[in-house]
Image (cartoon, rainbow, N blue to C red; front, side, top):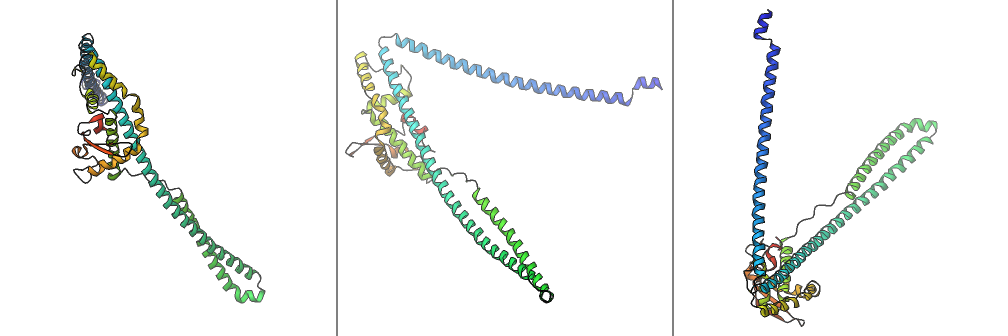
Length: 344
């Protein structure tokens, strides 16, 4: 018997071997899974390294190109003008983006305040009606309690003979009144719970801005973009500022030193007064926005961004309120990154 056991083994030995084999396959599967994840992460990192190397190479090329321009007498003054123009372009972009964001937040707060105000008013009216119902119910319950108390006193004051003849009927009346009082008390608790639910009701989520509001916002954003454009007082200078954001240094030559110096003076003369745009032109922006709205056309009824060609007229409004028009498709040409700040 022992020799057979030694040759064939026991059932327990075979079970242990099977468990070890299963565990081995599990470990092997986990290792393969871990290896696959490491391989995937390695490929991702290698891709990022290549992208970073490419970006570094491009920056190096730009720096080398800029160095060559700066040591070239024919280009050094153009480089200075280019970066002054680009600084102005970025300043216009930041001002427009800030204006657009503040305007959107203002309109959202205004709408939220209006919606919450209406909700609070409706809740207060509903709570007042519930409180009135509670008050009326309490008056009725008080009358029942007074009646119950009077009947009890009446029963207690009956003599022996009267109690014999009338006591059973009086006791029935007391039981009926007691039941009505208990029912009224239960109803009062239910009314108080309803009142508490009304008073502690959480406000609803506010709705998003509607089509008309978003269109109004976009008209104001375009009006502000036009104000930035008009700030340069020179269509050529404004277009040069915008162009500097679209092209790279060395793609444009602004002329010799004297020509560049003149252009620098024109640029710098507009820098100091730019801060007044957001504070001194509110009425102008409102009026210009209205003029833009009169001409705007939309592809679909639910569109909030107008067709660029229908808002391609710049409205210059002087201190006397006189309006002068000029053609400049700021939206179509994406002045000051206008298309990216419009409300959608």
